[in-house]
Image (cartoon, rainbow over all chains, first blue to last red; front, side):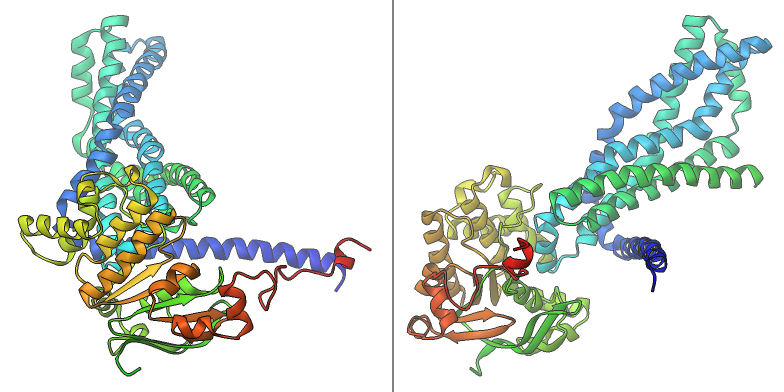
Length: 266
Length: 264
């Protein structure tokens, strides 16, 4: 075998290994998702665990969500007014702000912030629990860590995300209002009435909520899996935390495109 | 030893092609304190994990109270684990729960006891390990020895038939070590349980264990009472017990020759 053939073989081996590792991880994540669904009934019996996690993932994320939403809304108000006034339709600023937030920015930015704030904390917490043998200890006490630790966090994420996205959209609209009405001087009546007339409950608000639920499932399962699968070392947990942010962000943006395509065509 | 609660028969276990255990036989009699000793990386903790059903043997079997562990489904393994308590090397206390809640955890999960009974039982268990006064501290507020004692209280929360200890003396000061030694023996006798200790601390283990297994190179290299092993002429046992540098366990890890590495 000459050197070129050897190099080529090594190259394909490397690609093959990389694909097989990814396929195995995807399989393991799917298995974890399946186990979560199986153990959900057990987990709901101890509903206080899910409520506690909603507090940690949802309530504790409120500050970053509210502050970001307010700024995003204000920027939308400014940018929107600047463009719309060129066409003499600056009263439509309310519609622009509301539709941008409810359809896209609300679910997407909330999910990105959620992945950074709550997702990383879930991964690090579970990774450290694994590294300090807390999950093994639970297993040895005949208590399933999936039922006791994983499933409550999953449902907390799925429940918290649409609520956070709704709050994001509401605060964002308020930010847009603050810039458009009191500062720029757009007519208040036109701001609210155009928004009320043009934002459709089924097509805009419900679709936005569907997106945020899907993002909630994706972000939480990624964070949980990365923590559960992390090598039990400091470096392993740190890499898993980074992977949570990167994978979640890519998944959110990819899923957003897919969902938007279906929603617009359907 | 027909009165064994745990029997390990011709057990082999490995990761991939590398076998860690090559046909191990062990018996753990009821009511006794047995120890598994050996150097680091000899697979002592793995034996505990095989007994607890966290790992499956490559061949052979582990029988706990007449039940073959690896043939059980998840529910069967969980039923077996309810007869076991395990003390992990660093305690493995749940960091988000107080000392009280850590000890109450198995009771809340596996019983329907009313809150006042759980409170009394938890305080009794904590009293047994001398930490009733620490009931409302959080795990980060405990010293290493205290954390180990809380974990011991949690391990005996449901009065198990079998208590397994993974390196219970690692990293402890002499006073904490003496306390843990005393607790292992006294709790075993008070509960009528069977204890298995995985350790490499010779002096402490020889002072209270009833029977000791030495594991080396994937097999049981020696076994017997502390007295028998003290008198053993086996080179490995002598080297281990007397902490000798020279003997069958080499100082150097397998490496190419000096000539090769230093290009002499």
